Amino acid sequence: MRQFFGMSQQGELKEAVRGLSRPELIMLFSNAEKFETHVAELESLFPEVPSIGCIGMSYDTKVVEKGVGVIAFYDGVSVAANVLEQVSVMPVKYIDRLEKDMKYINGSQNDTICIDFCSGNDACVLTTIYSVLKHRNISLVGGTGDAGRISANGKVYEDAVAYALVKNKNGRVKAYKENIYHQMKNYRFIASKTDKANYVIGALNGQPARQVYQDILHISEQDITTQTFKNPFGKLNGDDVCIISIKEVKGDALTCFRQVNDSDVLILLELGDYRAIVRNTIRQIQQDFPQVSAVFSVNCLFRYLLFNQNHYMQEYLEDMSLLGSHAGFVGYGEHYNNRFVNQSMTCVVFE
Image (cartoon, rainbow, N blue to C red; front, side, top):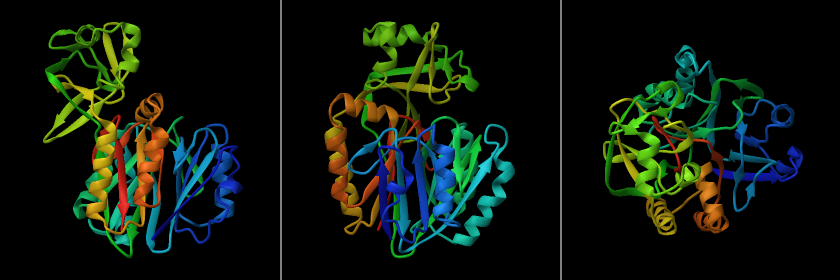
């Protein structure tokens, strides 16, 4: 298979798709003002081609911040694209769509990936989707778009998740997740006074969550929402760590980008040598795949902001391009199989 990336910093879709021929899946990354227009225009240019889309930044060796980007797969993939609606209430109501698409694709762990773009309620969505994918051990990579809207096959939806099942006819696929953080000292907390619906942590080890975070890191209240770039929380998940970003301060509580429950065990994380970690990821992929057709990745908004602050984003994209055709988008939360994570990179590699 092969991957196409096109962009227009001015938001002109026809410029972004120039040179695209016979796509088998199109992924659209637009801006809030032109999203509906771009979705309709894309469908008129490529009628009946499976497509999914969301609002957000995209990239290959450069970042498209406010224009429009298009990533397409072609020449050797089978695709089924669809949508699950009412994700804040009952996404399982539409699960038969995914089950039918799974039968149509007839994929396996080694050759098929599910890519999804979600408008919200990610944890519930991933549990629902993975209840079907797990029967064939098919991995999932995706993320949350901006402004609560996604698209699938030429239509715009709110409160929904768009997905594409992609089967590589000529080789393997494999999903990866990259974590640039490690545990800070031996800090461990029991969360309490949580508000699951609003992702609020009220207390850590019985003390106000805001005060605990400030006292450990010796920062002001105003610095908390940027300090999370360097020191997010982590939730242990077996041998893995699920990163939890802080969104804002709410009195003595902390509002996060991911749900935390009473009695959850959290740790404090600190930023590692992200340049070395990225190089290790690239080396691992090269070892696993001597021949790479394409890499599609999702980078967290907070990673993007951190890399920009440290003047590393352009270097990062150039490093990733060493793998071959690399493209992706900046999400507001990343999906990896049945897990909703923050401040991470997830990607799928096609042989």
